[in-house]
Length: 95
Image (tube, one colour):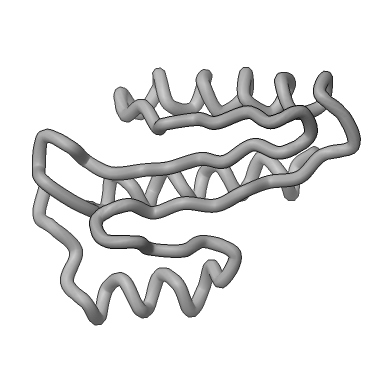
């Protein structure tokens, strides 16, 4: 994988404005009705992550779930991160 360049990061964010980039981490917080919905979402994210063999940092705070992505073994953001972020977004649309 190749680290995403500034223009690639900008293009991703223009198509996915709910995500943010801080340094070499791509993150987004999702909000749900309650804890059970949050955990259900995390379970679906875990299945996607296993399929992609790419595991995000996940922070669960009752009805809020923050997903943070970075390709640590490459030293920053790669297409692996943006691809998983896009797949995670689809979980919300399908719900």
